[in-house]
Length: 102
Image: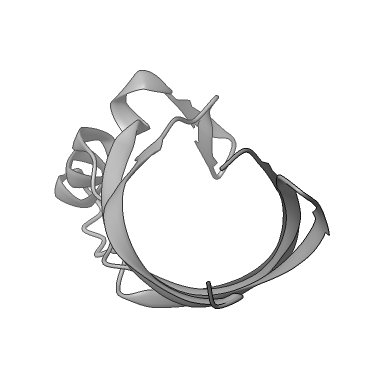
């Protein structure tokens, strides 16, 4: 078995906010809860540390396709007109984990 792995995947991030404040005005938090689809790609390397355990060292690039919510839509529609929006962004993750089992 090769110790190197290639990772590809995606999903949906669920964002939850405590509150949203603009110019000392607090907007209801539940209206700003939203979602963002994402995709990722990465590499992982497994280092055996026993007969059924290994340490996984990994690095990933994560692309988010833009947050959306009812609160953001309402905020942009209310006067004065605004155009706050979320666009595609990239993030990077590096880390280590322990894998146990077969």
